[in-house]
Image 1 (cartoon, rainbow, N blue to C red):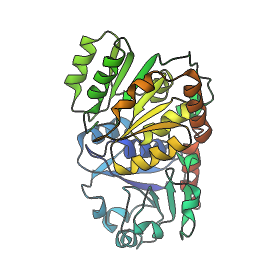
Image 2 (cartoon, rainbow, N blue to C red):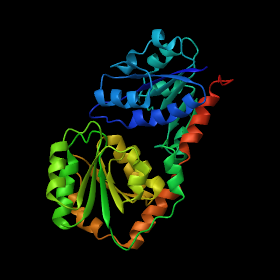
Image 3 (tube, rainbow, N blue to C red):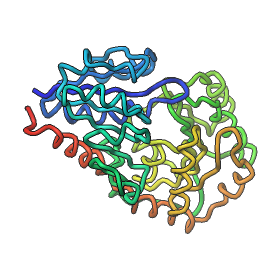
Image 4 (cartoon, helix red, strand yellow):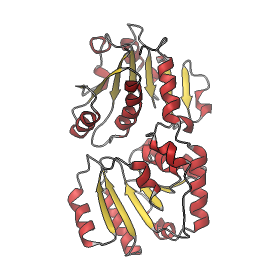
Length: 331
């Protein structure tokens, strides 16, 4: 039985995306006989999530504090902590165990066995001395996104419903602000507000739901793919939710929570799959009337552009590549 350790970043400002991505991978590896242990900070929503998924966890508030004591019994180490230093990777590789790293722009990425980044184009792998999986084909999404990717969307000439989901924590409390502005433009707009486990603005969202018959609050969902598919458009951050929207063909209007999301959203906009509204601190609210008047032709083009880029099969591609780092795989 392969023993695998997964170290993830997760916190109130960082959200839960990295952790959720790794649980998708971990579930498949567990089903194929692996024993999984997560190393995460002392962040209650993340702990609740892992307990719900029935994965053992150990508290590690500083991911760079991972030592040979923790990694020694492992056969494989997966890092979703970004920007690792060389000294750290060399330290955990002293026992020659394979290391897989996600979205790592630090010097440490030059010393791992497999580097995975769906946000970078394949051209960014030139000159790197390690095996890479770069680009949209390696977007790790839940299995249901592959199923809904092939289902035809019905766009009926105008925006009939809006989903607002700004990360697991919504650190800038933008959901209620954005919903208010949209309702000022179109008072009877059908709208779903999706709040993650770490959202601290739930009371304000409940007030919006109470005061507006067309507003519905969802406090987390286990059916993200279907939720995205069921709405005309989505306002989201430029993290994993953007990739999820593209996979099911839901036109995405992006407000970025951190700087690296802005680069990704800009790239998606150039490819016709999204509209980048800027950073959370300075997003362009003046475009909201234009967005709500988007024609069916515009929405259909965005929908198809997203589906052309992400097919929902990244989870199986990435999992097979991770398995291949352990030869032979130990059932």
